[in-house]
Length: 149
Ligand SMILES: [Zn+2]
Ligand SMILES: [Zn+2]
Image 1: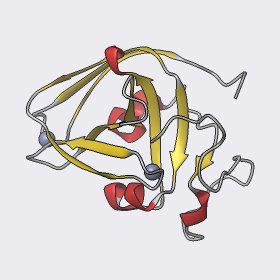
Image 2: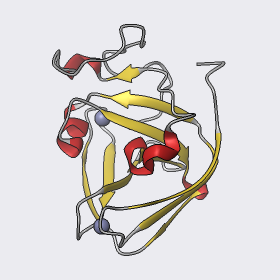
Image 3: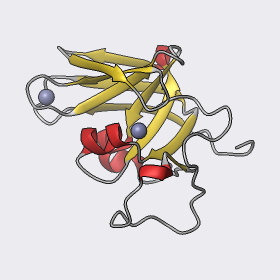
């Protein structure tokens, strides 16, 4: 979206056990929801809520583990998580290696005043039981020129 908000953030989040911290400082490039089946598995619910930032604006401290698989887009998507508590930390696509995807929920209450998803992607696998605002634009897969998530 041409006029989508791009908040400036400077936040630190920790995984559930406290072993890993994620420092995000910079401009949010995009905010969206994704209902692909990988995100449903990763979150245990109907969609993920994603903050996209430049990889250089995100710093990770602590020991992480990762799992890479071919995303529905055909790109290789790697998801990092805490090996102790399993909290999802960030993801990166082989199609957009300068960007990272951060789970909005990782930052908890700190997202309350600025996280506004602009769209739902992979709506083709969205489940009816996962209620979303009717006004949210939905795309069967990606909106044109949307970075991979
Ligand atoms: Zn942890
Ligand atoms: Zn997804």
